[in-house]
Length: 202
Image 1 (cartoon, rainbow, N blue to C red):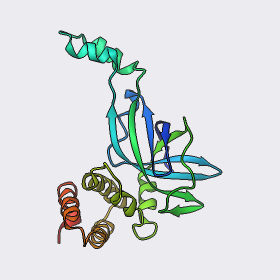
Image 2 (cartoon, helix red, strand yellow; image 1 turned 90 degrees about the vertical axis):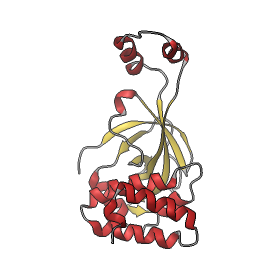
Image 3 (cartoon, rainbow, N blue to C red; image 1 turned 45 degrees about the vertical axis):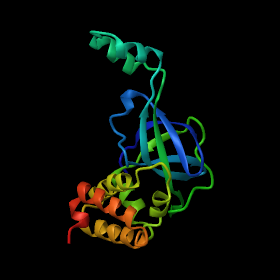
């Protein structure tokens, strides 16, 4: 299995979502829609999708924003030595307990637990398990741009699988799930069409 990449540590959360804090230097790898995993102890792992990335301000940043001719060294120092972490909200979509389940985990990660970015192999394994059961967690999420999140996730999963077959089945499942919600279906398929044209072609 490929080496794992730590993207931050658990700040707070619940069984449905959790917030990860990281430094600017750790922000190069995680992206909106990326699949991550968190340890739960005793071999359990929780899986989630990065649904939001926020950069909070502090007193010094507010001063620097209005200052003139801020030196690059000052900006670099502020970014690299910030005490205020960048926060990533992760929507929980499943867990592993010997095998992968697209059910909510029995408990959330604990404060300061390490959160890791999933490898391409792990993305393919998670998304191939079952019949897209984790889609329901995404579709019922509140205050989340569902179409954009699905598009970003399916683009990464499509790359991990390396073929159009999985992507076409995923799109068909979404059409089935949203057949009675035309507005959401239109938004989701529009985002998918922009992100991965192969998914909606044909």
